[in-house]
Image 1: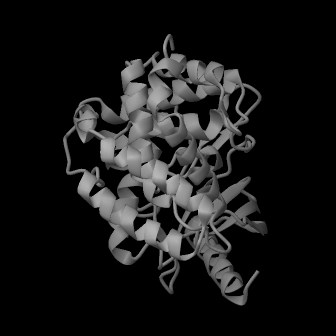
Image 2 (image 1 turned 45 degrees about the horizontal axis):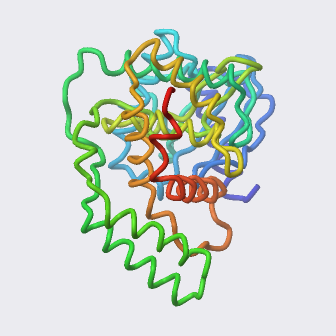
Length: 324
């Protein structure tokens, strides 16, 4: 642990003690995620989890958005969705030390992380059911808001592609060049009008294996609501399917069917909507197909693999999912 991380840890532990009267007996740093510092705590209030918000990743103007996201998390927990219980102080979930280090404190959830593509059929059914119910709770009696993110035009996609292709050819990265050439054919032939019917609402927007804990056949917890925004909830369909059911180059269709079955208990999900969801995630994440960099964020390597898989099967998705 760096001296800076140790200083921040000590400040946060002092703040937790001062605000909540919690005595921490052990703090174990978690080396996961991007820029934010995280610790697993043992305390006289039981196991806890604390995350410090990086000033680089979350500058001050984003804190109000974090409060909204965490408020939704708290409401979901009260309504029975398996998410961590948050601590709040003076109506705020983003807490502060005297030197203005920002952090969030919550109960530590039981459950296990799994590797990408390794969810079993029962876990996928449970995950679909949890996500479906979460969407129903978040988006019933909805007040429309401006979208946090909107779909890139084909022209913008081409400009972005041109930059990545130049980088790949300059670096003589043949694997990336080949992937980009497949991607360009899809971009040029894409009718973005298919996204016009995408529903708008609140979505977790980061539902991949690192943010889900499982028991043997249940969802133990959905984690990390920091990116929950008013976007396209369909991201929460394709993202966990690709993350949890794509094993190597094989998408386990029995797992996909299980997820869809669980989701349909709370919301309609046609095959056309499932395919649109997958294409929406592909369109958003296409920019990740680029020359690999040193010390890349590990999930990005997986996301790139998923994007390449979708591109390779782009024209066969309707046949693949027939009958689901």
